[in-house]
Amino acid sequence: MEKFKRLFSATQILFLLSILVQFLPNRTERPGERIYAIGLILILGAMQVLTALVMPLSKDYRTWNGVFGFIFAALGLWTLLTAKLAVIPQDIFKAPDIVAEQFVKDLPRLMKDLGASMVTITVGYVLALATAIPIGLFLGWNAQIGRVSEHIADFFGSIPPIVFIPYTLALLPTFKSCSIFVIFITAFWPILSGTMSGVQNVSEETINSAKSLCVSKLSMLFRILLPASLPQVFDGCNIGLLLSFILLTSAEMIGGNSGIGFYIQYYTNFGNFTRIMVGIIFLGIIVTVVTNLVKLLENCLLRWKK
Image (cartoon, rainbow, N blue to C red):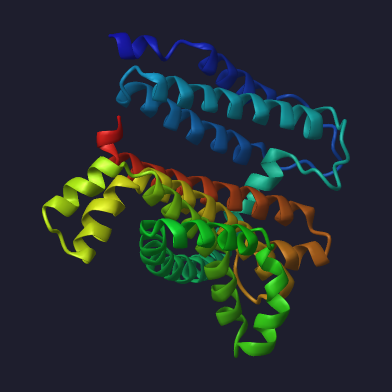
């Protein structure tokens, strides 16, 4: 019974208002089909109801309920300012119904571009994980080498990876390999810094206890130091992942022939602002989903931290 009471809140009021706004008369020259905007709001409303009925009453539920409320309010305001009142330029800022309709039509193309982008970022990011974490464990274990390496990592990490694109284009055979290298170098330094920082923060008692048991060097690195430094490692991984998406999109916009960044850049050249907005929203959804999946993995591996 308590969960059903959640269905009567400010979020539901915002949901109903965002629906009602769609039925106001349009003032744009080329109005879209309101069924697409209404369908989008109904899908989001179903997700919000499912969240209310399934999630336990906690901070996480209140957070997601607030997020849905913000989305409903944003969609209603977006519709008012574009299609209903025409306050902002309709040639640049399209109404939700027009964007949603174009999103549905371009979904096969978007999924194809997403596949190309995810292959690139997965290969580069996994290579960064496979190299930065072992190197960071080894460097962080040695106090003196770790302090020197920390300054070196800070220096190289402060250089925007996008400046390496001209060199990668000159040295590597394909643009795909150039993009993978840019992702690799983007994620490598934050992960390395986070790993070294985590190892250096491991207590001396933990290390001395392991040494007293005569554990091998590999066991010390991967069974003692790595688990103890996982919070800082995940911090570096999260930063590296976000930067990787930013650099991937930039690289695809500069010289790619596939991917989400290429999709946005291609239609930018033609001034197709509807598809530009579709690409931006789609990219935001993908990044949000991926980062939340990584967050779930982090919470699972760091249950002991709670």
